[in-house]
Length: 265
Image 1 (cartoon, rainbow, N blue to C red):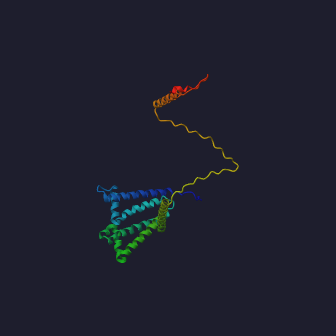
Image 2: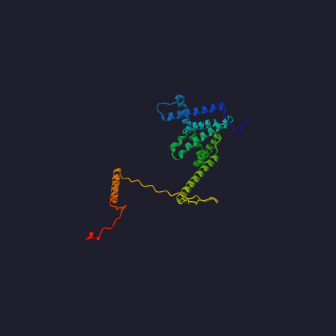
Image 3: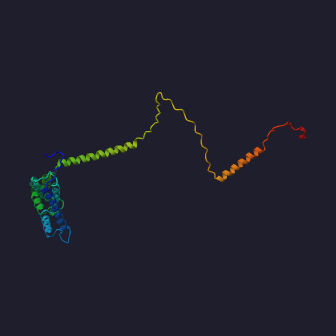
C-alpha cells in the first residue's frame, strides 16, 4: 500500500506520450504560422504545408485551438491523475471543443458577414444549419454549451472551482485594499505618545548612596596664540614687580620717630 505522504509518479509510457504530444503540438504551431505569415515556404516542409492547408481549410481559426488543446493535455499526462482509460473521453472532448469553436467563429458573421469563413468549412456548415432553426442567440448559446461541456470532458475543467477561485481572489484583493487603507488612515490620525520618565523605586532597607564630591570645573583653554600668551604673562609680571617696589617695609630693628612738622613749611 502506498503511504499518504508518498508522491505518485507517472509511468515511462505516460511520460513518453506527454513528450510526444508536446512535440506534435509545436510542429502544428510552426506549420500553421509559417503557412500564413511566411512567404519563403513552410518551416516544416511539404508535410507541414499539407497539414496546415487541411486544418485551415476545414477548421479556420480552430486550427490554432487544436495544438493548444494537445499542449494542455500533454501537460496533464505528466500528472498521475491522467490514465489511458480516459483517452476516449479526451478524444471526444477535443473533437467537440474543436467543432463548437469553429461554429462560434463562423457566428461572428452576425457582426460582419465576411467573417463566416473564420470557422472554415466545418464552422460555416454547422452555423448555417443551426442558424435557420435556432436563430442568432440560440446558435451562439448551443455551441457555447457544447464547447464548455467538451472542455470539462477533456481536461476535467470545473466551472464551479473556477468561479470559486475567482471569487476568493476578488475577496482577498478587496480585504487587502481596505486593510491597507485603514492602516494608512490610522497612522495619519493618531499622534505618537510621549513616554513619561518613571521615578526610580528604591528597595526597602537599602540606604541611599551619599553624593560624591563635587567636580571642580576645569579651566578653559584659551584659543590665543603662544606669543600673545607670553606677552600677557610678561606684562602681569612687570605690574607685580612695580607694586612690590612701591610697597613700604617697616624697620626691623632700632628706634624710629615721626618726622617733624616743620618740613611742611
